Length: 188
Ligand SMILES: Nc1ncnc2c1ncn2[C@@H]1O[C@H](COP(=O)(O)OP(=O)(O)O)[C@@H](O)[C@H]1O
Ligand SMILES: O=C(O)[C@H](O)[C@@H](O)[C@H](O)[C@H](O)COP(=O)(O)O
Figure 1 (cartoon, rainbow, N blue to C red):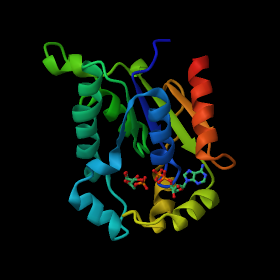
Figure 2 (cartoon, helix red, strand yellow):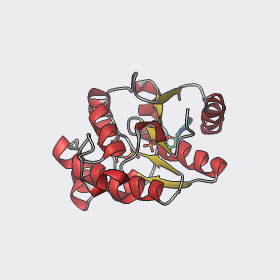
Figure 3 (cartoon, rainbow, N blue to C red):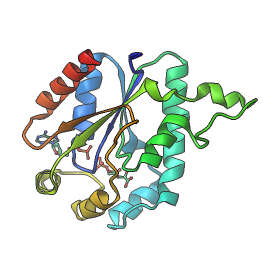
Figure 4 (cartoon, helix red, strand yellow):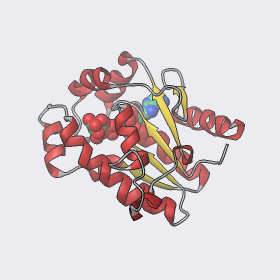
């Protein structure tokens, strides 16, 4: 398999995406982006009021993550770790291929799309109990812990043919999770 240019660290709120993603980027020497930093003010306010985002709220955000971070970075030879909830398969498809999933002949933007194999999904899975406990202890974040149930409701864990690794976060520290991902990357 071609080495991935992008690691997409995904999972529900509180699964450890930001913490583990930053650790992985530092181990790999890759650029780290946190999708939370790219939400519109409306999206942040909505989540802050305890209302889950809809597809309509998420799709423009995911398209811009594809356009401004992933396709541009990969086209310029950068390697990137992106922490992003990416809860549904269609959201991951948008991150990988942008708004149009299928390249259109004569469409110049097609060359900026990422081949599926260039993106490896790192799925951080964990129990509601563990993640909810961690979220209730997290300070200074706009996402209210009450939205966790809806995140599990929307979650579509990756499955074949998606290019992914799955790591359980229940019994491991962030450093142990990052080490497990690094080992799995070496085996790929
Ligand atoms: N494996 C872990 N073990 C213990 N605490 C963790 C672990 N991963 C993350 N945390 C803590 O849980 C909270 C949520 O982690 P965070 O990285 O913000 O998750 P996310 O980015 O997925 O919302 C933070 O306070 C973080 O320090
Ligand atoms: O699609 C969504 O509903 C949001 O992106 C959500 O999944 C994300 O989790 C928030 O941005 C909170 O940020 P944390 O994941 O860092 O808690």
